Image (cartoon, rainbow, N blue to C red):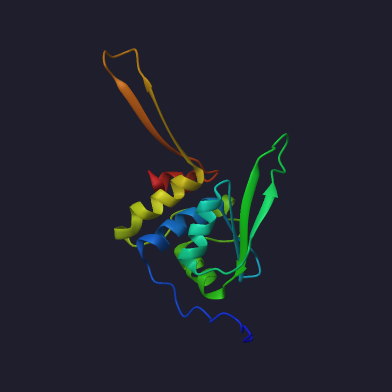
Length: 157
């Protein structure tokens, strides 16, 4: 059996629809640790985590964690890894550690905005619809995004 060496260092991160989607997901369900190297993503959807691992060529194992919020019995999946190049890329985009409180406008190419928005929505969005009785034959559709940062939500709008 051959010896397995360390994985090759990422040279750079190049924008693509998949990378933009991942940035949206990291903006909502990701974590940039303060050490300027480590990142993680948590999701209820294991396939989503495996997809992100594939997009970013992450070899780290997926951890299974249970909800730690009051009366939360759900299972979550998390992947944690170290990647200085990706970390620097994300900070240039506008993400930071403690991003929930500091996130604002993000810098991404216009051509990838909707891919980013899809990832953002998959992380912290919802969609609902209902019949509005005020108007005959009206069916209302709503697309919602959540954030504790008013600045970020105004930018999304």
